[in-house]
Every structure is written in structure tokens, then in C-alpha cells.
Length: 462
Image 1 (cartoon, rainbow, N blue to C red):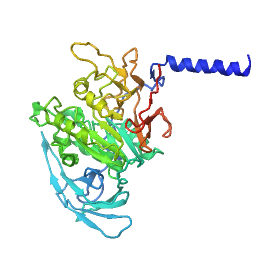
Image 2 (cartoon, helix red, strand yellow):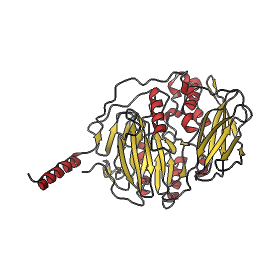
Image 3 (cartoon, rainbow, N blue to C red):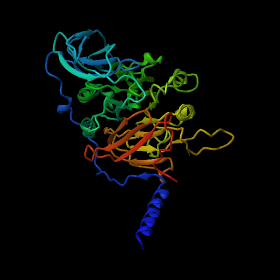
Image 4 (cartoon, rainbow, N blue to C red):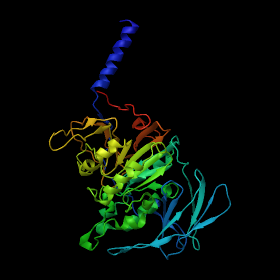
């Protein structure tokens, strides 16, 4: 066989591999072992020294466009001051922002004094230092504001979901912190502390989780999505208000996007418009969430923010036998809008594993035609499940077989993901499993923007 014939034969073989591949389930085999919570005396949960020292410090975006920051923390001994002293790296001028204090009771638990203070009118792309605990034990942290909003502004988001406070959770957070890609903001996909998994929804676990995550979320904003473990609804012990611990501890700028609830809202950051939805709030026709999303999607300016990202907790496309079809009713309500407005990517959690879809839609069905099979649709988003933070419930390992055509890649491992926007047309996405080195990408793909560069970016071809 000549050289040309050999190359031709090789090309045919490689093409056959691509043609026959209808999506892949990872061959990686994770050692079967129980997910174990870290003991409460672990260093990651340690209380900072000093009288009434601020703890559980966390920040999130405080306005629509990235010039505000909500700073939150807890004091245990007394209320103390809710003021935040802050100054830019390039200026010695220190300013003060005043906040407010909230508390709550949950069965036999009384919270500490929860502080929320919004800093406004920050400069873009600037490093700020801030201090909390003024008057008693003062602690200092810093953050960097995003670049000014624009179509070609590069920015890197981390993706974490269903984290909990196990040894695997700690590994996930460590991998994210040490990633060479350096995420600038975390898009958190719901299920934070898993306090509801303990007797009487032990709210001490909210405090330990806040101290555990402080090492990241005190320095860069985490954008919050509410999951089912945030519901904390327990009528048997007299708790009938859903989301009570979560809504007191984690504030978001929902009013800035004309939302009437903190469980669904939107922000703009760099070149992305991010919409957060609530899988566990009403979303049927005429409900507040439905009406808000109906009004929000036409506001998205793809010339200003080309990348349209949606966050939710329960995935719409899920080929694991865990939480199967839980997102179906929301999909029926909203999927047509996602296709119409060309959402680039939808990130979800809930299923404790990893999965990435192709661009598909299932919007042709009506009660007359009976068409109910997802089809490839280049106007549809990619659906990605990153519910693999490491919580004590363990991994979802039971996959449906055969693997559906819409499922491009799936794996039952703990990990985190990165979405790195390069410009208005290209973004690089990667997922890292905990059991590899921090620079190893177990799954990666280039995204082509649906508005500016809507070419086929499928990774599985027929």
C-alpha cells in the first residue's frame, strides 16, 4: 500500500469512528467509596479568633451591571457594626458603606447576627480592599470588580453545584481555587450546605458551610441559585416558610432586574447576560416567575452582552436515573423561549454527576401531532449538568441505557467546570474531575455564540 492509500484508509477509519459515535459515557472508573462529611472540628470550619469576629464572609454582585457588591457576614457575640470600610488599590481614600442586620429562628436554633451591606458605584476592573467587624475584631479581604460591559470582553466563570461539606467538597473547592484558568466569579447551581440532611435540619451546618466556603467567596462573588436543599420546609417541627435560612443568609440583587423575588433574577457581567431561575418556585403561566422571564428575555441586548447564560437547579435534559424528568414541566413552559432567544448554554445541578448535551430542542410537540423526540437545533442551548460538587449524598452512578442521542458526554465523578469567554464569537468550556490533576480537562469544547457566530458546534456527528 502506498503512502497516499494509507492516509486515505486512515481517514476513512477516523471518519467511521466519528460517524458511529452517538455520544459517549466516560470509561473513567472512580473508586467506589462512601462520601464522608468532614468532622466539625476540621480546620476548614474554624472560627476566626477575636471577640465577635466576623465569620462566613461572602460577596455577590450587588447591582445589574457589576458596579455594586453585596458583602455579607455573621457575628455571634453581639450585633456589632454593619459598616464596611473599603478602598481601591490605587487610592488611599477609605469610604464607609452602611448595611443592615437580620436574624431568624429555626426550631431550636437561633442564628447569629447576619449582616448585609451593599457597596455601590465601584469602578470597573479595579481591585478593592474591604474591612468588616469595625469596632471589635476587624477582618480584611479584597475583590476585583469586573471589566466594563462590552461585546468582546473576556471573562472566566467557574461552575460549581451541589457542594455540601464533605472531603470531596473540599477537593472540589481546592481544585477550583488552584485551577490555572483562574475563574473570576462562580456561578453556583444550587444546594449549598445540605443542612436539611441532618436531624431537625441542623442549622449549625449553615454556619460551618459559610466558614468552609469563605476562603473563596469572600474574595470573588458567587452568583447564587436556589436548589431543593434550600427549601428547608419542615412542618413537623413548625417550620412552614420555605427557603428561610437561605433567604436570610444569601442576598442577591433581584430588584435591579425588576424581579419580585430573590429566587429568580438577572445580572450582566463583562460580556454575559446571566439569568437565574428557580426550579422550586411556581413557574406556570401567569405566575410571577413566568411573567418576569417573559419580560426579561426581550431585554437581552446581544450587541452589548453577546453571551446569554441561564442557571437553574433541576436539569431539563438528564439521562441519569436520578431526578429523572424532574425538570420536564419547566422545560415545557420555557424551552420555546430559549430557542427563540438563542440561549447559548444552560447550566444546572441537582443530579450528582456530570453531563453535557448537544444543541437540541423538543418544542415541536402538541397534543395532536405526537412529535416528542428531541431533535438537533442550532438555535437551542447546550444543556450542562454540574451537580457534582461532592456532597454527602454521593454520586449518581446509574445511567439510562442506551445513551440518548442528545447526550454528548456523561460521567459519574465529582468536579467543577469553567466557562471562559474569549470574545463575542468564541468561548471555551471545560470540566475537571477531582481525581485528575488540576490542569487536566476531562471534557472540553469550544462554544460558538448563537447570535454572532451561529455555526454548528456539535461534538457528536451523524
